[in-house]
Image (cartoon, rainbow, N blue to C red; front, side, top):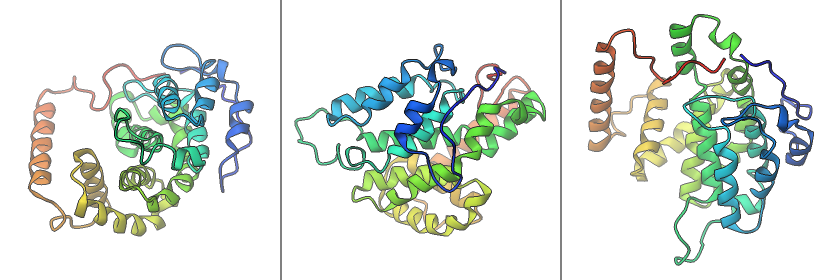
Length: 267
């Protein structure tokens, strides 16, 4: 594993550093990304707050693309996640892309895009991924994977930025916030918030047809010990059965299948 060289502002476990402090106080050029190091990240991250939704969309594509590849948590992933969490409450993020004219080409609002990335990153660092890593690469997997460990430790702080968005006026944003919050709430310090998330989950399952969101929510409820039989529809049952068949097929392949990972671990 590359030596951890992250440098960002002092972290308050009860909250998040200011986004400008993170942007200015992080040695981005020293941090590993998908394609090298993160010297281009400050400019892209700053553009996430541009008043123009098209500029924000391009910035999200550039910034997140630098730290997103094959379920890997990079050195630059943690400060990027903190920065994104720190800007979630900014006006251009919370309201800027919603209610655009119908003539504007369809694209996910910046807020939804950022919440989805936080959710996917938390999912790539959850207990199941750790268990798979330890099974395939040894019990020191998480100890040696400093980047994943650092992200996991920051889940309560990131959750604190996501939680207020559970009441966003847009259903799309509320659902994205819920899926992100559920992924983050695996952290032991967030157990007390799961009851609130269950209420939101029931609301989502009553109205959403999004397959990804429904799968994530149902998986979480089942993991937390809730009976979801009265919440599932026919499509949910079919998806669950299809997933079970795929898992059985993969298990039959033997020891060469590495679960979540398609290449050697990133250390």
